[in-house]
Length: 296
Image 1 (spheres, one colour):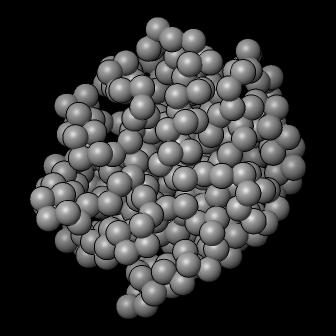
Image 2 (image 1 turned 135 degrees about the vertical axis):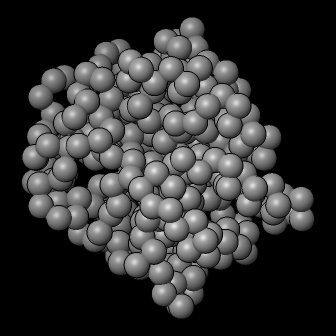
Image 3 (image 1 turned 90 degrees about the vertical axis):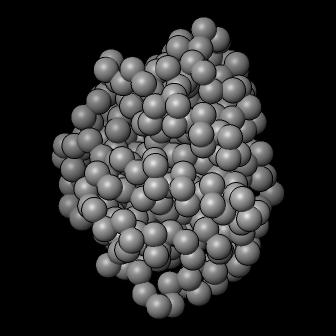
């Protein structure tokens, strides 16, 4: 758990415990890839980044991370995320409401998200949105938040960042229904933890699959198999920091530089070089989020 509260409430559905303000204690993994990396999903507005965010940014640059996509879980976070984008030119961000944040859903939320996305070209996605039946069972309430955000992504021609935990079946029902009528936006299944069969179903709908630190966990066998099977042009890598630090830092605060460990493990599982995985995942992230270096 972060030391002190976040700048705004963030559900911990993806989280392994993050003790105290534990900073980096070991050097970054080597070797650094020749190709740049993209951390396609991070959260940097937590208080446990307050004291050393400049050092954190130096480490991600040293690790070869040239772009980051900051996720959003509810509208009150947007000003703080925007300020981070002002501070770090390589950062882009999403706007959205997490499925466990129903208490922040209001009658004007879609209008707020629309305005935020249209006001800043650095907004590259809607999310993170989705379904989570691991911590809550309010499926209908979550669908009532999910559907208008999917509609907004279509309206603004933006991809979606989908959180899906213990909810693959209802998520596929929703997305397939939309796909049949041409109303399904593109996007990414973030922090992938599903089965190979579920992955194939989301791939068939046009979605990308994003691997986080969980792919380094010894017992994450289904995730390992997904990393082996996913097409080279359909996967991303992420940290979901400050949660889910990869081995050997599991249980400590995660940070964007550690996406290098994720890429290394994906390379091992695929029998490829780190360079190949860095190049493929970065190319895919740039394609999905339409990343560029000239957005100010």
